[in-house]
Image 1 (cartoon, rainbow, N blue to C red):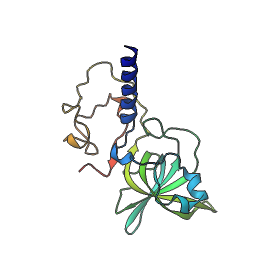
Image 2 (spheres, rainbow, N blue to C red):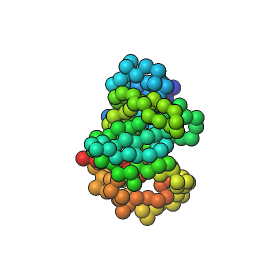
Image 3 (spheres, rainbow, N blue to C red):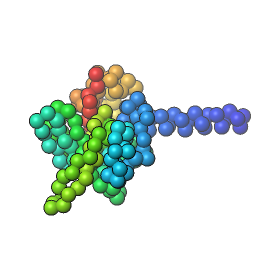
Length: 200
């Protein structure tokens, strides 16, 4: 019996670890969580091509001729890879090919990105030079930090998605297309509002 309970405990822990992140399962494969912004700034060449997951607050989004740059103030990530308040290790840039709407990637929204370190770029903060790590995104999710999380709704919600549990790409009302069955009472258990790239 003790052996059975131990096995069940291990399986439960593995299950929780496997579905804690808000990011897609496959995209997190081979992510190096030990690499942070200061590591890349100190030795850009050694960390080029490294796959990371970083997050923080969007400072601005700039549309260039063939790409969009999102400047991010790094903050710690929670157990679910959602940005949390805390001390920052610096700033980085997400460089995405093509057009991303600055009205979607708004200043002060939270963002989490899984991507690869492509290079560093020297920019200005005020009058001082600053070395930005540049990340090529594989997946991004943004979070509306202006809305405080609501406690879980104690009763069955009339907005419950009838396609549950088929969330994600198998849900015909998958976000970011603003599902009519979005549950406003789901609170902190469904924090993300948009994802990039959109589901196939």
